[in-house]
Amino acid sequence: MDNTIRLQYLEAMGIDVWVPKTSPPSHKNQLVEAVVDDTELETKDSVINNWNNLKIEVANCTKCALHTTASKTVFGSGDNKAEWMLVGEAQGQQEDKQGLSFVSNVGALLTEMLRAIDLTSKDVFITNITKCTPPNNRLPDVNEIDSCNNYLHRQQQLIKPKIIVALGLFAAQSLLKTNKPLDSLRGKVHSFNDTPVIVIYDPAYLLRFPFKKQEVWLNLMHAIQIVKNNKG
Image (tube, rainbow, N blue to C red):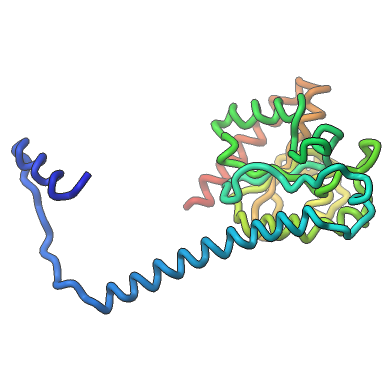
């Protein structure tokens, strides 16, 4: 609402309006503000360009042999300004066909998990350790992980999430460069490029062992608190 109209409404209702005295406008300040605004726009444009360039780079990647067997690269899905970044192990056949992360029953369960903590697709970015699907649903090998490592780092740097959630043992071990078992990684706060990391069970595991959902719920509650604390 226009401020003049707002003041008229307030006065008509008998509400006294205090209007602070203002100094004459400074052309110098206006110039500085204009420069700041232009800088902010350039920064936003730069992030968008870098994100789009990274997408193109991933789509044309030939760093490892997976590009010869994968149908599509899976860059990830969601908002590139999301506060939450979710990282899974590797894609399956459906992800390979559609070029999207976490589809089919596993994706449906993950969506429900996010809805349970009031998160939508605009609140998260979901990706995987590798951007191509290994054949025969096998896990990626060390060379394939290393080939994609730079892409994951750059995604994190551009998104600047408040938290990263590692989905399952393989994703956690690859992300954190550790051989520790899942039970020793869950329930603790780790770090990836100075971003806090929480480890939970993979949704595919929860489909087989649904009684573990309560443990995941507690982990996600912990993650929510971490995000709140990071907002200051």
